[in-house]
Image 1 (cartoon, one colour):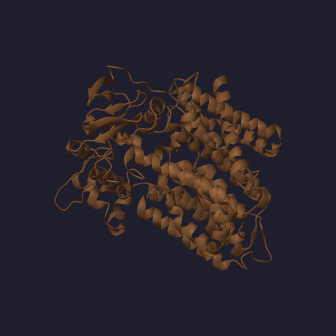
Image 2 (spheres, rainbow, N blue to C red):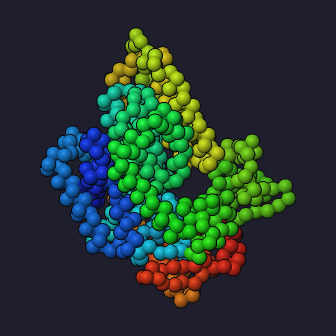
Image 3 (cartoon, rainbow, N blue to C red):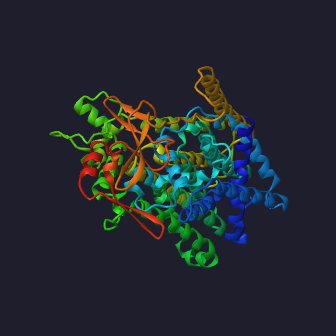
Length: 599
């Protein structure tokens, strides 16, 4: 427990240290901020850039990781000793970290950890960047792995533990500090609703994965756009927005669902763009470089700007994966998010939990065809999933919170919307358009839906409160915030006690780390002069679907290839010290992958 607490409280020091140096070197004096929430997220952005730049030339050895950690801590203490960090902000961080400690103690990591993320970090630790990584194991080439480009820097060199969830938790903590500061400063019901909804909705760390951090950042972006449009323009807000938006897109490209709201901001202030760029050219250049590194890394590893979006792929690159596979994978992901598995289960009377095969029949849409249908067709299958219930529950929760807030409230004499009605209308319309874009692209709550509806419902009730002119008492805010925090604490402490009583945590307080063993779960193999570890069938670390399954590589050293997937390997060459893995030009890879395109 001692080492866990040491790690838990040292993580934010490293992050803040790098956030401090980013803001000091890149932001102009007028754009600098004492907000520790923003500073922390800029630490994540800086660490992403450092990780990407480093991996272009080196592997992540223990000494390298330790050096980066020590530099971050030194930067933190330099900023603290020289009074460049507000002690009140540090106090908030300490208090919130203590309160949310139970959230960080989990028995199991996110369900995708052993399939995507741990194997990806094994790659980062074993090799510098590889051309055609997608042909070794395409799950390693997803652009959403960017979060783990950051998290690999928090591996402790002397004692490996499954500790990556702690760093993800600090995305949440820095987000809460950012929103909390807004509430304290303004007592605006809009910020307050976002705060309470976020405490209740994001109360389970195991559900975070790579999907929640970018949504938290999008909410912050939405808050900054709200301030610029309703409260007035400032270069500082725009600088914060651009930094956060860059981080959100890097972590998950479908963060583009914020586009309608962002375009509204441009509509109001397009004439300020040239002057802003001139005054903040260093920040613009810096963010452009970070985005460029993100794009180049993806092209090198997969042949696509964003994998697996087939429209962004360069078909003539020898190390790019077969375009037919990219198209099928993209269509499968789209179709699944719109209810295709329920459609297939109804048509074929399937009882299995998952539907992975590209089923074909008369009067039946394959997932490739289903992805191209309109909502008028797929809506009836989409509602068989629980996503629409989560949206309704969120609306009901927002309504209840607001009704409790206005108990014993007084009426304001004047509405604050006298000069802002049209701006509110446009902002609400834009937020609904963002929801519509989410619904069209990937209508799953974890793929942007939480951002869309937390932001939209908070904005709607803010507007409604301005119409009814209610002045909400601070006492009501404090009581409801206390109840929300009590709910989060009770839920997580109760979960921990149940896990301990049922002996579900083998390495308390760390998450369980499941090990795969040579000759039992994987074997040594060789193809095209590439020595690799083949993941063979066993009962460990697999998505079991009765007659079908997906094997996870977990902690197996890189390169690990699940059984059967080695058919995708083509020739390997070495140029100037960089490995290049070409795709297999016959159809054997496509034929294998088409049986289960998610494998």
